[in-house]
Length: 33
Image (cartoon, helix red, strand yellow):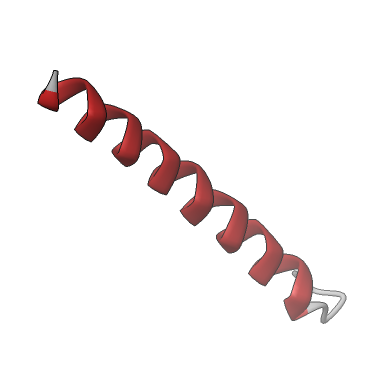
């Protein structure tokens, strides 16, 4: 990110974390059944 916009990077990290969290929740639910 050379144009100096850290909020874009933060947005990307948040999206990735959210995605991973959903996947983990899904797998955890699958394991309990």
